[in-house]
Length: 518
Ligand code: GLU
Image (cartoon, rainbow, N blue to C red; front, top):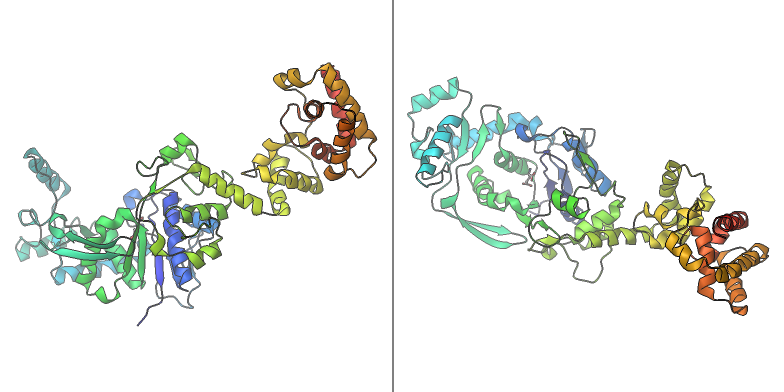
């Protein structure tokens, strides 16, 4: 029987979602949508010590911003979303709300001999660890040590029974089988085998807070939620043998999901995992949205830095996957059509900040002038600029090709909104020479008297023709005019500037530079 594809993204709300986490969610989403399956968001919040308020909301908001919307899961307001089916048997999607589910599963493993009760206190374990370390050994709770510790494998039944009733700090641990080779298959890495001899007896459930640990909750929920593929970060690969053995212990191997472990996102130099520190040091965000931690420290986000979500999604998709063609620009829809786990690379993917910017520039170019104007208007307003939409559209049309972010629009040509009051000294010294500016002022008169169509195309050629026919030095004359319009020698073409700001403003700027520099 073929099962409906159901994959999940299962973040722990321990802080803001790293861009690597967004990539994991994205690959899950693409995989599901390509197969007409369900994409589920499950919040793994059973570790109360690492819980960070606001992190869950952040994660959902970040995924929403990217357009990675779940069929089932939790929305930003904390409500259950379930668009996939009418009545959902899988809710709730937050593990803390599923608390009563897990104990029976842990107990079932004890009954069947796959797990045991452990009563060692933290102090006892600490002492044991210290004792072994003093002898140059490392302590793990497992096959070589368990029989000398305090647990139901080696204590009299009556004592176990009594401790279970009287104490509230015991745990249930998995009994790792001895010397077994666990044979596993990974959709990205292929066949992997691990001998259990080095693996410890992980805690599965804790009486103290009556909560499961990650391993138990993860397996039980993947089973109950009918997950068909687990696509997650490679940091979980070492847990895979335990997960295989848990499926076996529960008797769920028939419906065990297939696994795919994604390689890490690497620093730009390829040496190690991409961290927030790299972002701070090299000037790029590693989080999708801005995040302020409890100490009030702000980490930058792609959204606030001016990235378009489509660009962010596209660049993430390409960090670790290649389509096998030269194509680099993909919409989410196109990614759904083309993505495949077979083309996910095994090695780590190096992050490249310039490439990230390139994606944004490409998406900016694709946007309509009207859409970009919508984004630029509020920026202008915040600067106290009062310009008509019609005017701003013309400006945007003229400069969009030069920008990477909408915020660049201002820096590219502030002089289209405010007249220069100062002149770059070096440029003025170089260009504003009497033999040049007397000619430029005559060219200005030509512009003011020009009666043809006052557009860049209408004015541009006649102006050049006028300068050329007088045998004046083109560059020098133009640079004098540019100095008057811009305040320096870098800027748009004279005909572009002049026809935008209009004759009146042009005349004002000419008078101003004369009053200052002549
Ligand atoms: N809660 C785990 C995490 O935050 C999920 C790992 C998994 O997908 O199995 O990474």
